[in-house]
Length: 225
Ligand code: SF4
Image 1: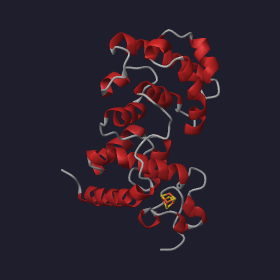
Image 2: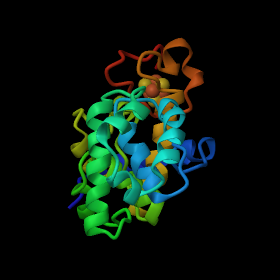
Image 3: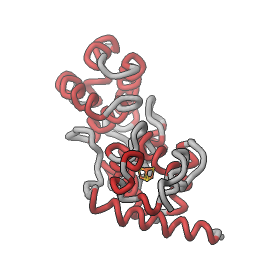
């Protein structure tokens, strides 16, 4: 049974989405892609790397290897040379080739449409799987990336910097049909407003539309009550 505090927090989460949704109406990835395969590859590359850097890198990758059947046959060293500008490129190149080989072997060269299938691919964790399931297959997805985790903690909706726990917390507070929209809106808020080193409220509280709902956990007391 839900605790009373959970129902208050669910109300706060709903209000947060109500405020952010019109500000960030596009509930989709910021990564460039034209197919499920391209999105999967882009998300794998985006770990510890900015979306902009990935978007600068993927055109050459997809020009050389447009789908899983092609990439499964690539030499890892050749893929490394094309994606060397993203962090951890050696590991990511290996993951991309191995994941492509598994998709060819087990999924007829297609991106799996289940959480279990996606998690069976090298380099794919729950964040990637939820992003792919929501963007490619229209399934509700809670996408806990570094921006979402930081904002959720500052908002006091969770207290531990653990993506798995934060995913469960959002699942408890937000109805499934809003998971994807909530994830993307909070991601944009974290990326552009509640930034890691310079959250908007530090310079001027009015610059953050969530100021009245936010305890600013980890940032110190508010300037005024
Ligand atoms: S008030 Fe500050 S800490 Fe809270 S969401 Fe806004 S920018 Fe982030």
